[in-house]
Length: 464
Ligand code: GLY
Ligand code: MN
Image 1 (cartoon, rainbow, N blue to C red):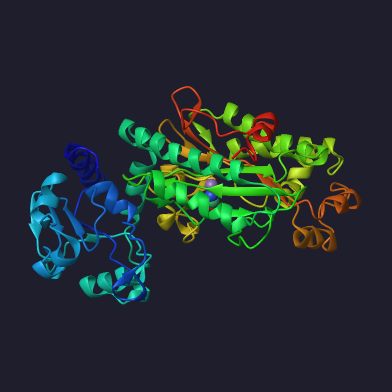
Image 2 (cartoon, rainbow, N blue to C red; image 1 turned 45 degrees about the horizontal axis):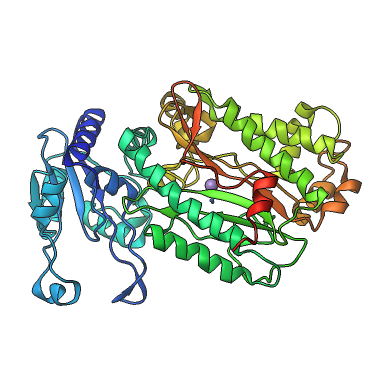
């Protein structure tokens, strides 16, 4: 946790931006795994963490905009809890640690919220994404669960995303620490990879590193020789000489900040020439995008740099023909890389995604999104100093997508479908690092580089 002044300053800034009413920020509750007392690993809501700091279940924060008083609601642990959990701080202690004036029992929350509603005060909230939170909010606000989304606060949504997107010095330091976990995870995967070993054994080692150096993974580890399946959580394969292994994994630090990296490497330790050719195109796209990134650049300009490099490289392999711009306009880039170049990173591995374009449509909010230019709508995202985002180009050979494009006559005369047949079982390559936009350009998060050049990767794979 950071110093209490940091949380007070954040809440004051949010108060200034919202101007009026109450801001209701529920933390997460424990979520049962298979029976009530056997719960999933607890993860706090990231917006609650940002403003109220505590990674503790069953707390709710309320910011009163007009009175300037913040309140932390929760119930003190009883002796019955302490028998199982050991001595615990009180809600008052939790409030003091983050500079919150009031600490109240949870039963008081509904009373205070309903009183505010009766007085005609607006209660700002973000769209809840967990069932338990939806039910609690529904009861508190007197809004049916299915209507909660429609009545979310647009002002709060933009204010939170704008604030969380621009990382302060203390957050950047935390992200550097999260990088170290990612470094251990990825170098472990490379060193442990060898023909005959099962994917799940290596995936287990990767996840173990996340727990050894941090609180665990920042998302479910993707590790597979079928790298063409973008989010492949199936680790049932046995590693085979000649195949590539894609590992996309990240760790979470104690303070909640995360890392997200991808490396793709040869199971037997040496790339074939064909693999090296495709790999170096992806690596050049990765390097070109990072080198081009400047403050004030639109996200679309940043990703176009990578798409241009990818298509230029694919032209050299005679997989694409004609002009780069024509190929991109015809959709060739999507055929080989059907995902975006990056996403915000911070307390979430896809930062603020619960309030972003990937959670609901911003079609009716286009003007607001343009004016805000923050991470929640990538079409209007302007990259400014303090923004942290991933840089993750890839080239994938996805047989079903190739067949679809070909059957529909897409990219005819642009994509060399005959030559592409030679790559049907190639798999996929993705390379990912995390960047922070600076005053003059960008900097890669991390004190060192997870091996990425062909030489460095080959020198690392299998070296247990
Ligand atoms: N690392 C997984 C993703 O970015 O979607
Ligand atoms: Mn990513």
